[in-house]
Picture 1 (cartoon, helix red, strand yellow):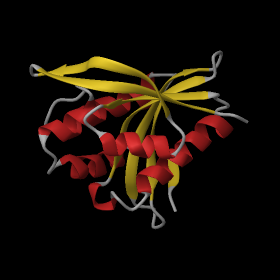
Picture 2 (cartoon, rainbow, N blue to C red):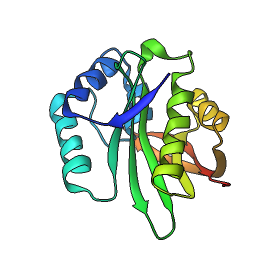
Picture 3 (cartoon, helix red, strand yellow):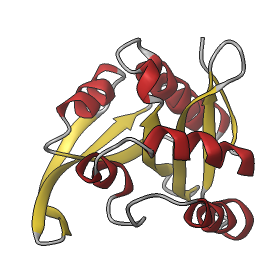
Picture 4 (cartoon, rainbow, N blue to C red):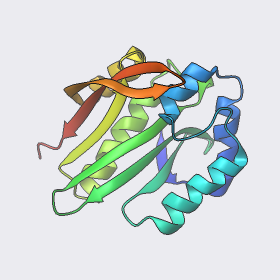
Amino acid sequence: MIRLRPYKPSDAWSLLEWWKDADEKAFIKWSCNKFEYPLSIEQLDGYFSLWCLREDSGWLMTALDERGKPVGHFLMRLADYETETIRMGFIVVDPKTRGRGCGKEMMKQALWYAFRILGMKKVTLGVFKNNPQAKACYEAVGFKETAFVAEYVNYDGVVYDGYEMEAVDHG
């Protein structure tokens, strides 16, 4: 069972642990060029400060396992209450729990939160073309591809294509 709660600064240590052995390409898939490799506590403190303390239209969430241990993370941002749309990003699951359904359960909970608690009608996200596991996870919980984006990110001269996806609340 996965539970969601607001991100706390102490969750940064879990994120650091999850990324400590990751290669740079995997890190780029998560950070989308918004963090520098390797990840540091200072970068995460700045991330928390921006999204939890200063930004009104976004916040960070942590997914917990049945013991209350962090197993996932995501950002909800660009909340627009007039168009009832919100965007997700920085989605990650603890590498030790991958392949066990934690990512799907976290995303189901995130959609439930967006639709039932926030009253949103649409949730959007982006995913890299070279990340088929993540794309399949998003599709499994109801996201649909809406656009292919060539040159989604350029990192050190390497171009990454991506997809825009959305999930819509049908009531």
